[in-house]
View: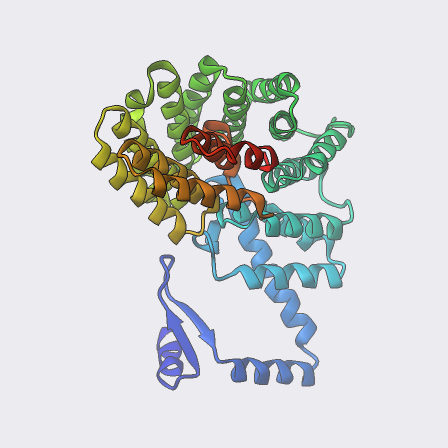
Length: 416
């Protein structure tokens, strides 16, 4: 088979690329159209589409099993299989194949890792609708937990809360604790972001506690991360520290080291609360190394900004500027808008400390303009907002500190 594929590549009938997961072969569009026409002529198109959908549903099964590797055989974030996933789901919907639709819905976590929050929401909603209620209750509850989280990350808090509340109201005698615990934790984050911190903490705490009696390290890890974010919003340093420690303890059982990246950022936040920016240098350094290894450029940029804050606090302005510029470059290269805005605010502070108030003011105004433009929220953005607040609000305060009286008006209109 490898020989035949090589011959087809040599004849330019196929092209080959070498992503991290191995060789990938693609056919020319003219060949694709010819093959499609032959399948239609031979009456085999429906069978081919069904086989294609079954293949990707099997990949979804592998990604789901144990959650050890959430993307399964789908490759890294930004996988080239994205079009295939949508084609498989479209077939399941059109063919009313609720079984395949329910299996494909399990790919919710893939969309989080692939930096496609809004798309992930659409995919999971379409899959759950096509499943027509045939998925087992426990599975539907866990998928609703994923959906609640995706919608929360998208910033549609009223819809996220409705999803979570509706799911908890369902009769749950068939559901295992992990499913309910995850819904409670996800709903807790949504409720907290909507402003009810006390209820959010109660929900997230209950969800995490529900998981204590079960052997499910993946669910415990996710719930601990969500509980930590709620606790950080409330300024509960002790709970954030405990939950970050929980993530480090349970993440090993998932085989997915990327969970350690946000956990280490949470530890850096704890260090800052207890000892100021300089106390978090070691944790931010660890987070940067982990983020680089996981391919999480947004987290890497955030860690670089944290290191810059520590350098500035210690009086090393040159080092702080170097780190903040690296953070900005990293964020912009990854199209991570929030992290780029955060880095611009940090760089503005550094330049203001160095006496360049004019450039600092220009950076702050850039962030204020960014904050006024409607945008899709990035994946995993909630944790950044929890740990560092809104960059636009920070820019308004910093600009006011430079003596710009217009900042107060701009700050009043900046989105939260």
